[in-house]
Image (cartoon, rainbow, N blue to C red; front, side):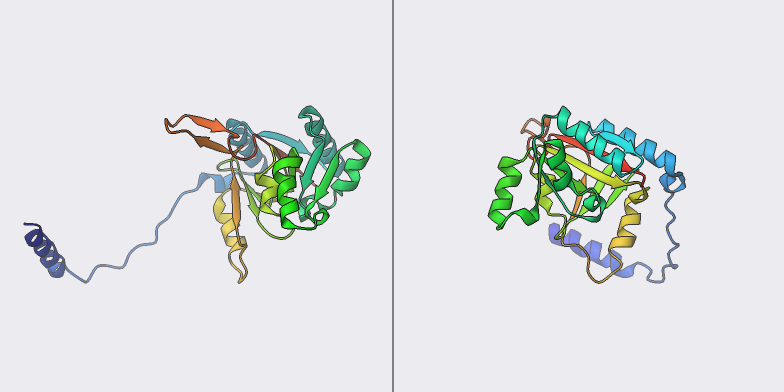
Length: 223
């Protein structure tokens, strides 16, 4: 019976006309594409907060450091691990931390991967990174893993604090794809973060912070 049905289907496919008209290009309407900067910020903030993330919008370097100090103090953080990517490089976090009573290290302070891994999982309470992109359509951050942006810095500590330059806030994922994957050397990993880490048990009850950061803070920096 099954064999006969298969033959019938194959025969119908063989007899089907082969001269299909050429397809028409598909037009997808993306309302976020038409947003201005302030609309993108507002939508990003709304969706980030819907996932229990916290946004601090600041004007410059000084305000970014003020916001960072406030977060670290309020969360009781004394030790943090920082990336050295472009978005945070000018903050000079290790030196700044010494003057504020915070011990902030980078991957360069560890002689081996095992030492770095142990610090990320067991020693520090917070990971501080830049963010390569933010997407207003979902309130998501994008981090491109590389030497100055180790994955564990954003994934292992209890708190993740991301510094997002305002000009890196994009309407949709497509903007990032067009910019990042047009060359011959794409990143080895692309990390998308929408709120703190979340998982669910066998009964589908969701838990935030079960594996990875329990809280996510974003410092949106205008300059």
